[in-house]
Amino acid sequence: MSYTVACVVGARPNFVKIGPILEAFAAQGSAVKPLLIHTGQHYDEEMNDLFFRQLGLPKPDINLEVGSGRQGEQTARILDRYEQWLLTAQPAPCATLVVGDVNSTVACSLASVKLGIPVVHVEAGLRSFDRSMPEEINRILTDAISDLLLVSEATGVDNLLREGRPPTSIRLVGNVMVDSLQKHRAIALQLDTLNAMGVRKGEFILWTMHRPSNVDQMSTLGPLIACMVRIAASIPIVFPVHPRTEARLKSFGLWARLEAAEGIKLASPLGYLEFLNLSSQSKIIVTDSGGLQEEATALAVPCLTLRTNTERPITVSEGTSTLVANDTVLLESLVQKIRNEGHQGGRIPKLWDGKAGERVCAEVVRFLEELPAKT
Ligand code: UD1
Image (cartoon, rainbow, N blue to C red; front, side, top):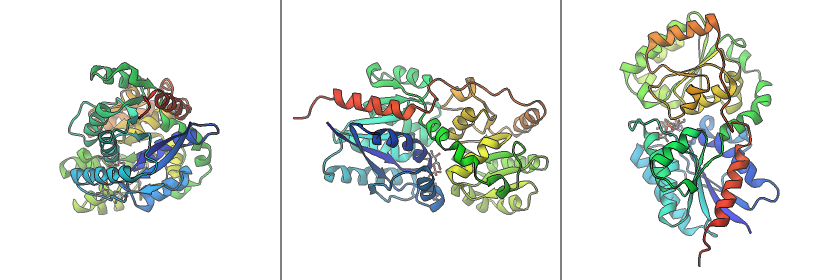
């Protein structure tokens, strides 16, 4: 028996998660035939093509080419185009597999479930309990309509049970991003990225931010940039800039200040391998990215997280992350403390072992085998 499963990706963090899953599906004897569906949410060379090449992902079977847009507009376009594809696909997939929490995740889940095609959500159950985040809405809605919920950390299981999801649909499988990280780390470390950036191992901060809550208003972005400039006077900061952040920095007149600041190494969005090279060898990571909080934990690098909450609490309770929100005084003092006293590291969470992709595959097969046959 062979099952066709439509595997959906749209944005950069999805690419990192789908790699290990596709690899497990492609293994000899696998009962799953994956079809890779790209919604086109991210499309730039740096945000998209470079990741596909470096992660060794196959060319998508289908590209829905939705591009950028307002939240509702982009989500609606994905929903419409994915539904149209599902209606004409031959053979129709047995299931749709979605990962993470981006607009592509919720839109394709909704199109699929309405056509009676079951949905598998990888990275289910994470909750920040902050409904002002577009990703939190995507998570809640996707989990409410998914048939198989594959979870990366134990709090996700609790959240899903509390929301009334059936226990039989929930499985703790671990973190597929860690599979990618383990697989590519040695290759990443062979690159000459430190030299290219002009920094030395263990003597720089890696800083990223792109969340609307941090970058969309001058009243939050301005103080964060002022803080970055102050810190960079004593330790270099590598700052790969997301396109959304670059646009805001330019419109608020902050870009020239960053270019002129000593110790700040501005970069375009980096490839997966160059980024992993830097994150593995940085002294401290400062970020508002959920994925990077997890990677910092997996790499045992201290992470100062520019958010008031996190949907990945294990990165705080067991890992290396500390929530600093946009409290720049706290941020500067913690940078100083880590530089003076070092950092204790943390524990690697359960099932973050490089084998999550295999467990996803096993659960998907079991789920499909148990589905009642369609007449
Ligand atoms: C999206 C995800 C976010 C994830 C992030 C990783 C949602 C709601 N958000 O946010 O969870 O952490 O991806 O990057 O799905 N742009 C480009 N080139 C591209 C893609 C986007 O220049 O290839 C610019 C466009 O101006 C676009 C803006 O970035 O309007 C935002 O892109 P979008 O995909 O809407 O959201 P992200 O901020 O990237």
